[in-house]
Image 1 (cartoon, rainbow, N blue to C red):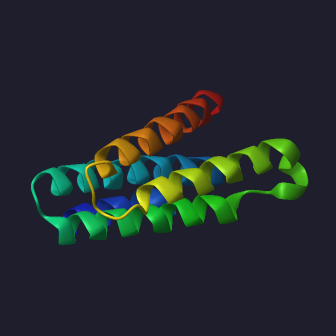
Image 2: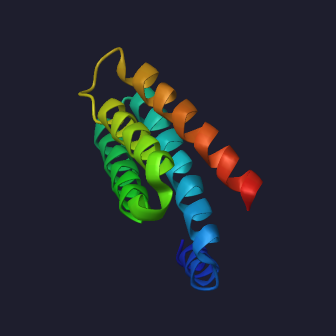
Length: 118
């Protein structure tokens, strides 16, 4: 675990701003996958922890938006991030996996476009 953190930290330290956003998208998708896996395994505490980390990453993506230069695109991304966070933040229920999966789909589309312009 410790070596994994060192590798991740060195990867982040040498990353460009564009690559940092790419890393955030990757980590966000990982946390959403973990949340689903833990929820389906009945590990609600661990699922909540993964969801909380996913929400923190979404918050970071929101604060990274440049509304001055990004204009309508930044506003549209903000709306998507807010909606994804709303879905992730649902209380545990039968619909939670569906809500997380729909958030993943929204984010995956943006992440894919981000990678394409990289």
